[in-house]
Image (tube, rainbow, N blue to C red):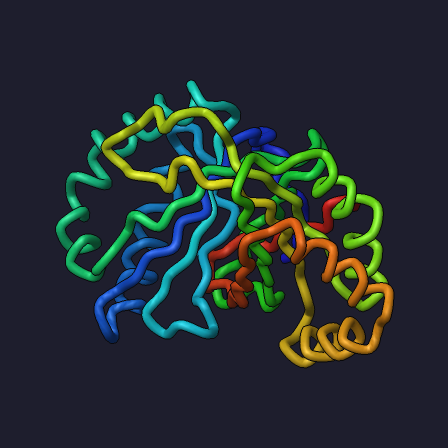
Length: 249
């Protein structure tokens, strides 16, 4: 089946990046349960699930992304799902796999057109092979225009020149958590970009290209001056994860 854009997905101005630390050996257990019971049941109440991933650098970490049209829609959708039959029936089994599910960042697109563009889910027996790499830059204060301009005017072009496909650029959503039953990391200030590569080898070649670029070293140094720290997530999509389309496609 061709991978076509999902025209049913609504634009999402609010996203959750959720990183779960699981009990040893339980990641595949949770993924099987999640993909069987929690995809359609969440989307039926108004969420968009952009992807589910295995963290390649943390064998007990499960990462996933879901989006909402806005903050009021988030509160309504979460209330409907967590009070609904799918979660009530399977929450004990899901929670039994987890050590921590509170590592959650609330994000929004940097610009109206810089959010994720979800494609269709793979047909049965197929899978999405793209590697997704997220870079999260943490700031001491709200991300300002200088940092966004650096991303827009220099960093993005250098990443693309080195072989990356840009999927989304995001920044922290400052609104208070309006579903306190699920904690989020409030008061943090993050600028993030998500990239796709066809293979891990393509990503490694990308890293080599950046390492050899004086322009990249200059831009990265400037970004480092503005930030407290940064982290990189290398994410392998699960069997039912959507393929994510380039931001400018």
